[in-house]
Length: 230
Image 1 (tube, rainbow, N blue to C red):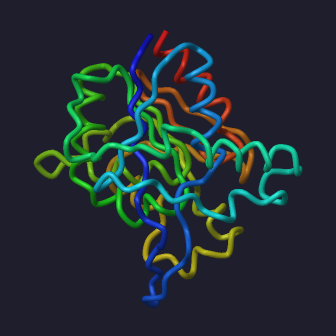
Image 2: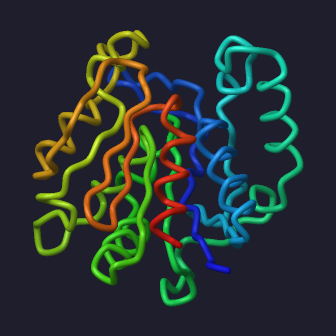
Image 3: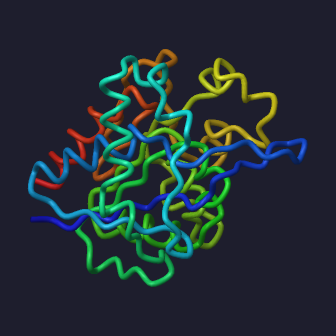
């Protein structure tokens, strides 16, 4: 059994470029699908957030429309409401990476607000990468990589990765409102960003780093991360 650390957002709002607040949180599928896959494989998951706050779910990610059908949406709502891992997070500030075998971060726009500038998230992700521990991130979860700067150089510079693309942000009608775009910032950090067609399943694996482009990629990301954990 491996111990997996889920780094999750504590933000329920995203500050747009005009100062208004966009309701957000984590995207349910990107947290629930990997949680279930890892637990099914016999692993233990611990959720950590800034301040130990219960991670807020983005209500938009729980709708039938967002998930393709009512049954899938209902299942996500049930897990979000009942999973002990989500209900009892620990504080990122107190996490010792030595206690964990792998690190994972789901998306939603919440990480754009807090994890992108959270030193503890950056410390844990950079440390896991250096230690050769599997690191997985999906969609906007990759915003947490922006906090992994060491002496002015991003720890993930030179790694091949994917995440929510500029094209997808435009199709979601948020690109013009966003204070910055994830793809732009990752590329500026020196990450080799690979974009596939919008809203198609797409995963990149580079050494011990697994990244996925969007919610449609959650299952494939979970599979790739599980394979690396062994």
